[in-house]
Image 1 (spheres, rainbow, N blue to C red):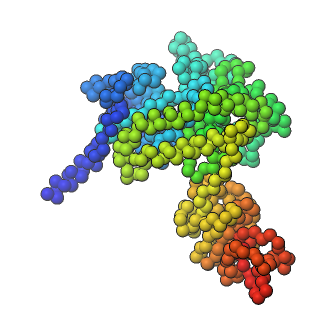
Image 2: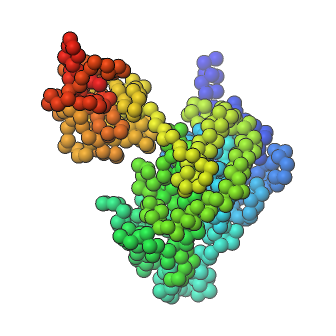
Image 3: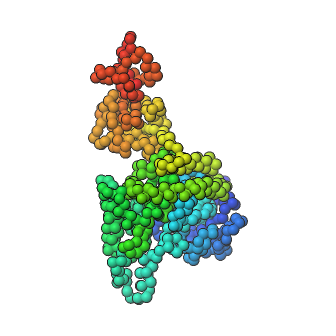
Length: 586
């Protein structure tokens, strides 16, 4: 009996299709089989595979192929963080022949996005895409939900998405690589080194990305926006036939624009000769509404047509993985971010840009932002059952949205607040000043949870943006931050600065790791004053920690003996009454 049981375990290990979970029956199913059922382990190399798309009774969905007659495709991994951080992987697929999958425009090129990190009812990308369409960007990727079975294994709810590329139905420009390919075909015996590139050829057409990852197909441009700041410009098209002259032209072009944006007179808008104003404004409006604080640092696409007189266009949009973060303060501008948001702050300096942003926002408001929530509600209704199956499939990994209603409602509140905040910032009537929100704040460090945000190191809000935390032992390196290192991230001004017990220490946003001058201390109380950006570590042996509500017949003196009429929470004073004098933390 034992041998039979072990054999069964072995069979389960070899055949992951024996998961109990099955497709929901409410969405089309895409069934993919790689050659010899090889695992997909590379983002660089395609595997040969077959597929068929089964509508599963969904009205209006066309079948492609069948179990008996599957169609050829190629498949590989895609993404950066989403590829290595999650077991539910995203994929890029290339069909052998163009197909109008799930009603989208006919093409060979699609992505299967997993959105394993989207616990916000899968609303991030699909909402961003709809806001982009509403803002009027020339082209926005279409996406449609489906469920996927890969090599016999149900792998959950996916979003079949048009990829960003030059195409008549996408970015309507010609890929220069195609011109070289056509020339090589017409000139047998010649190589790409023989192609007669001209100076104008180097000017485009170009499709590039502000990237936050190093890439082989990339140029690096030092930026004037900060010391040691670089633009990593990854070229997507052309890609196969790019010479040193191409790369140098791209470096010079982005250096020129960077110089215009960071010149002392950048508000004059000299950069408008290089960048299309309306698409730049549309792109900004979309990302500000989505509160996408990574929008100009990665997956930020720009394109231009061939010619020195052709301008760069921001877009299309792609990645909204940072939107709708529960801890993110929607009253902020998107450049108020821990990431280097390339160029956007100085784009805003230009009055013409501000006016175009306002015009686009007003046009959207006139149409009515209910369009977005209606779209979300309809989409959520379509995927609810599939989301439940997806969550069950990935239950051991903690992915998914088994309860769609709660995160959807939270997303819609946050979206409404972001729209209101944006309207107020633009000075429009009918919008009110938002109340800045601060999430939980933690002591995070090498000896306090290995930099994790743990409840035992969470500060208590004392009011007036003063926070208190008592710890049994404080040592090692540490900082003050919220759970996601977003709105609160404070440290020291230099690595070799040390905090002296019972003395206020001035903090710096995105500062260095801090440590105590004495190395470590036991039974200390930390008072973090967010208004003053100060941290004081109190040794309770030297001061009594009390919060005073009634100042009647009480006088306060600082440690130099000078009377203080308006003491601040979190500061150390000598309290004097008619009968006593003692050291306290106010």
